[in-house]
Length: 142
Image (tube, rainbow, N blue to C red):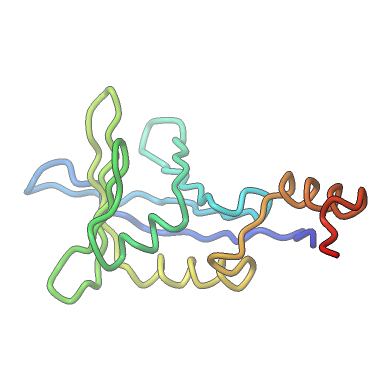
């Protein structure tokens, strides 16, 4: 089945500069069924070109309730009520710490789940390979 739509959203995140200074940035979120495991975050930083990072959808979901991630991306709940999320991005130029309300991220992930349910992801390439197997008789159990 080919999906022709994407899920898009916007999120205000606080870029933590220091314990005393945080400023708000706009983040565009995008999910496309053609790349069903990934969510793209495009960060709009004042005075700079937008920067896009790609995250595993499952990592984002896991990070809402418990510390998750390895390497360059870590996400974890923040605050006593788990109403906020903290995203830590590691790059050669330094780390970026961003905070956001969890609610808009939860709503965005729910919309992606309605488009492609979590655990039922299949890429176009996998679908093409399965279809080729079926058409050639290799995928037929009998």
